[in-house]
Image (cartoon, rainbow, N blue to C red; front, side):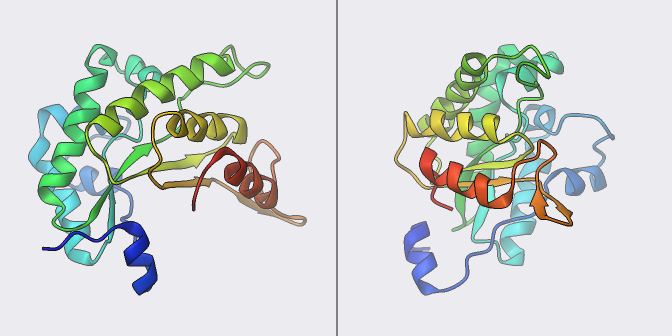
Length: 205
């Protein structure tokens, strides 16, 4: 199989990402509320099967099982001491089972709220995203995904952290709700505002 970069694939036509991993893993026995990242170490073959199913379905990009693998999310489930290994192993599994699909290092919300809604600081969250991004980059992902964010401030921190250590493409997205005025995040940020903030921070898609 010949390697094709994201840029090459985009020039050839539409590029398909995978879908949710969690729902597939629940069909394989993952309990509701159980962090999928735990399975990276316990059941790597099941994580691999999920990636393989998406690859066989035609996904050009597979996202690593690291959506909740930032330091604070792993701390919640008591495995933060395995932070580096969980992220590294997730990339290896995705690469092993994903055929010629590109591997995207997936980064999701930290699970914390920024001040004044919560106690987290900008520096704490950026440090956590930076720590995760460094391991994903060292593990040789092809690109990064910052996804399903609800707070544009947190999302921009993640993109900024990645840009400090990598020039690889970044896909970034938010969760929106439709209102009478258009699409807005739960924090009140418009689609247009989020798009501009992402571009300014260094996101590509």
